[in-house]
Image (cartoon, rainbow, N blue to C red):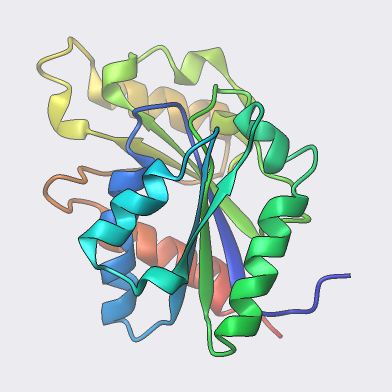
Length: 206
C-alpha cells in the first residue's frame, strides 16, 4: 500500500499537444505559491523531456526524474505503473516536504488514461491544431480526465477551428467535469490550471 506522501497529478495527451510546455509554465506558477514540487517525465526510450525541463532551470535537476517506458506510453501509467510509482516513492523519500509530484505521460492517443493507483488527479491536454472534432470522438482521455485542457488556443484562427464550438462540445461530452483553455506561449490560463490542481488535491483531508 502506498504511504501518503506528496499528491500525485498525471498529465496526459497526444504527442505535440503541449504537455511539456504546460509543465514549463505550471511549475514556476506553483513555486510562486510556495509549494514544493517535483516532476517525473515518461518517454519511450529516451529522457528527452526530462532533459528539456532540466535545461530550463525551473527545478533542481534532482527533482526531475525520467521513466523510460520501453513500450506504449499508456503501459506505465495504466496497465503497470510500477516504474512511475517507484520514481514517485523515491522523490517522496528524497524530499519529505514535497507537496506535489507532476507525472507527465509520454505522448499517447485519445484512449490514454491514468491508473488511480498512481495518481490522485489527472489532466488531459489536447490542442486546437489537432482539430475541433477531438471532443466529438469521445476518447477516454477527453471524457474521463479530472480536467481537460484545450491548449494553443491562439492558433484557432489559423487552423480553421471554431474554438467556442470546440469548447462547448468538450463541455457536453464531459458532463460536469471542467474544461480550461491555455496558451503556454503567453501563460494564458496557467493560473486557472494551478487553481484547479490546488483545489482538488492540496486542500484534501490527510
